[in-house]
Image (cartoon, rainbow, N blue to C red; front, side, top):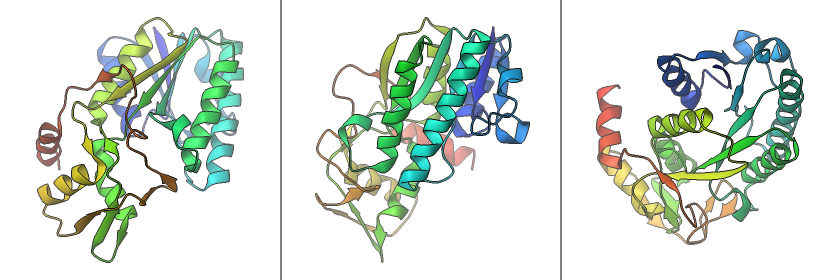
Length: 251
């Protein structure tokens, strides 16, 4: 099967491409560097010719509210047009758990717009909504730091390892389109502040984590269940301690 992975050289993309190639599939790791650009449309028609599945893992280079919205809308329209011309039978997109429940977060609003374009495209699809990646815990702490203090909400958090995300995305891509949403999350759920504090302690970071119900997450207020699946979800296999062990082994 020919599968095109948009954003195929990124964190999740490179792992997904490797899994699918190991399975014997013809996989195009599409990125602007390879001459395939979903924003300008460059190389899209040629890359998608003869493909059965497209996996959209592209991400905006800017997180500014308007820029990220324009990115996902432009990329989505270009992709869907090229997919329709190529006769693509399954569009898989990676989105975020809670996108529709955190309207104060501009990035989440842009992902909602992306999802709406997918649903209206007429192309059979599956949207995989993931919780935050364990790999980004350090960056999250940095974004919420003032001085030596990290302020985080006590809202529930259930981060997932990138290896698990890639494995599930690859599996979904090879299955029949759901024409709906699949929620995925890590195997462990705990308050946001506690998970980040656990991470900082594990890596020897001396910053203090303070529980603050008013703390924002990329501009959005975090309620108790804002960032975790509300119903059934497919869980990853890699827990925090195992992920930390693996990340240290490959550092």
